[in-house]
Image (tube, rainbow, N blue to C red):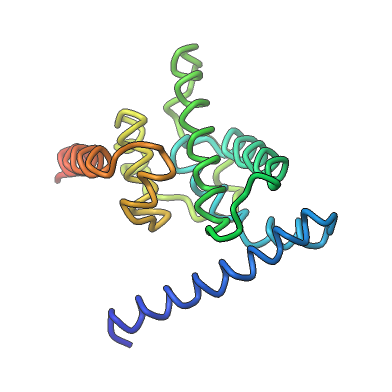
Length: 187
């Protein structure tokens, strides 16, 4: 399958998922616990991965992803069903992960830059330690954009909407972050 066909297939699957997510949101608003479970099953891995890649701490990432899910579920009445649920949730996760990381950095917690030992127990494959260290060295704004673009496969437009910044800001943060990673990971 060529790249264009693969991209078209992903776009179609995303539209179908979005339509069924909108149905699940409506059912959840009507009190269906099964609809809430289905939304959780569909979006948990992406939510957790987003938090983990930004925070580099398995336990904190799980807490942040859960908090974001609960917050989003509590605000379903404000959700516009014409939009996709996944980006709305990712925005909540990424913003909470950024806030948590900034707060942790401000408190200068011991071990904040070290990969949690619990990561080995997580179903998400552990990334290359050199890459994690290089990501951890990036400013949080650049780290979030790089993770959203290259780990979560968000478009620059989606990232701009999720972080509530102009697309040009996303592009410049992405370029600066990738340049810094290139220098840090150079042989």
